[in-house]
Length: 78
Image (cartoon, rainbow, N blue to C red; front, side, top):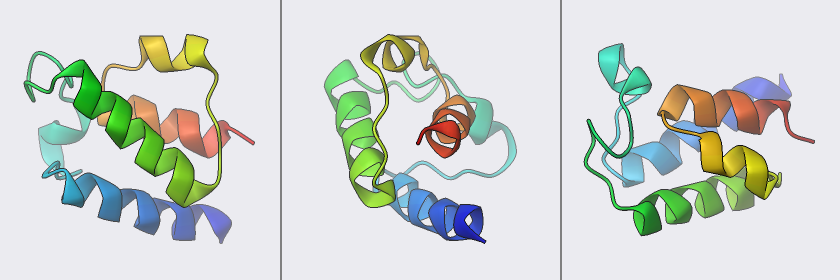
């Protein structure tokens, strides 16, 4: 039940950045396909960490390239 609530919050944050999580967009690369700057990706990650009250390690953040990777990593984080 907690994951459903977390997913709803995450979807809201992604929508505020104009990123739909349906179809191929959930596997789109932040930098190449969505053409996001690193500062906006960092802001997105920060907002998701804040909303979900979870924190990611810097090593993991550096390797995240897609919205689906980000969501999976956040849901696994404690």
